[in-house]
Image (tube, rainbow, N blue to C red):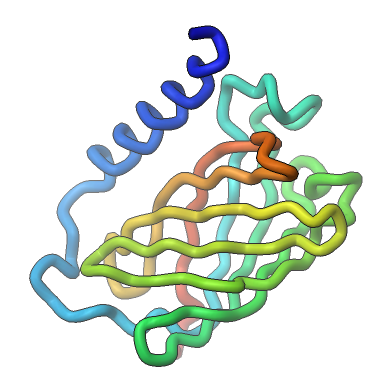
Length: 157
């Protein structure tokens, strides 16, 4: 049972994030084109047993997304917020290898080549220019870090 407590905490966190996001702007509409540049932050959330020394770490992130058909691809960057990015700052760039939008829900899969980890960003489009959600990063099947993310689309896009 002890092994499943972190997973249970993640599920409850994601449910709470989803419930607190407020009304959806995209319900009942076709998939939203999320192409463009998005920037914002991530915050590592407790319990931080997986992410040594990074509890409550805030990093500035950007996504350069391309939406084609029903798939999303693109680039990811991480920059200093109140701490350097994971892996001693080496995890500052990555590739969005897949993603989907369904209604107001978005899912992105990011590969960080420096340590061959995968981060999964699940979020909700709360407006045409904002996304809020949770993320989890894994390496070799082991959870490295989890938290929340918020991004806004660059103006003029």
